[in-house]
Length: 324
Image 1 (cartoon, rainbow, N blue to C red):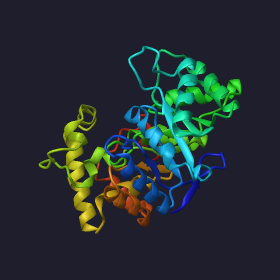
Image 2: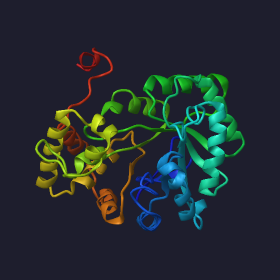
Image 3: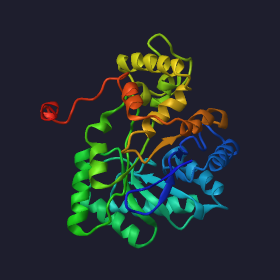
């Protein structure tokens, strides 16, 4: 396992991050502990969770897993997605941030978390309000650094500008979706991260299972996220995604790669990515994602695989002309 530094924090993390969304859901506590131990054995020191995962059970189980090795690990969690029916049990308000961090720390049984993500953009809360709240949490030592997930590049850039102007704690880590069929982050988010020296821990490298070999234009399993969950059906409803999956699986077979390993390795090979987040329901499903670290892609190979999918349009119409 290789390790990278997140932005200018001096914090070293494994080139793979393990996401614990399955803890307490698709994986019971015993299986969750097995996956945690396997990740540690593989050299992973970076674990991601959220207060909304399995209604808090993910944080609770992860808290028990880390009990004897907390100081060896880098933890991130998130707040913002509704955790209850109360109107204020959601969003990025100061009130919700302060209430959420206390519950997260209790469930994780720790006195701090390294990176605290705003889970998604809150149109009802002024960005500066959120940034001041996160700055206060950093000063209190409850979080070490603020972070952001699922924000547009302009929203992140605006936040970084406010933080600079007001001398507030800056976002040090971004968590966007990124995989071979969902490449929107390449247009502005990843260039922004590189320009502003912000780390990137991206999620869904397998496209919700699309790039595992189970799906294709004429292939669909009887069960799976893209079959059972409406949000994933909507996210991956475009027909060209499935034709891309077919081309990718053929490429992986031709070059003797496990498609899971190759899909994760392709994301990891983007120089803007600090670490892709991998996840699984059990240890058996986890193994090919762990083996992705054995694959090293050079620029030509990365571009060859990228050409299997439809690249997103450039941020400006003059981009190609200016490069001639």
